[in-house]
Image 1 (cartoon, rainbow, N blue to C red):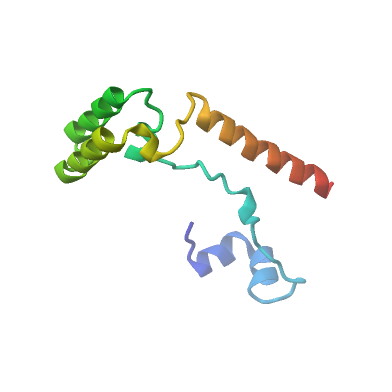
Image 2 (cartoon, rainbow, N blue to C red):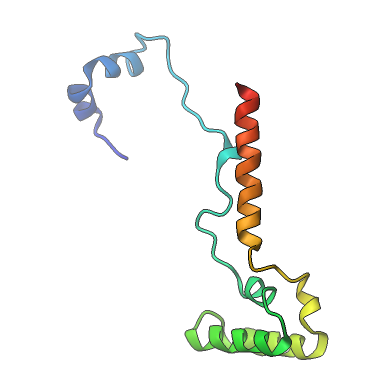
Length: 120
């Protein structure tokens, strides 16, 4: 949010004096970075999608779909297909369960609630 300083002074004269002219005790504005939601704006990668697949065939369908939509290029799609066929799903890590993101978000919010209750 952007305000012209003169406009701010006219709209909020007392606040202007406190902040700009240092008539108040001063203010500190900040935030706790640990409260930022790690899932906000998160977009799964092709590997995230592959890790939710139950078979190599299903993973190949996902790769083909993402390639068709233009979310990955032909080179990346070809490399992924090759890895899937040669090394299998396990190469990409343990399978993510259907409720993986829900459980991870629940853990995050529970830890946040615990921190807030510890503060009083």
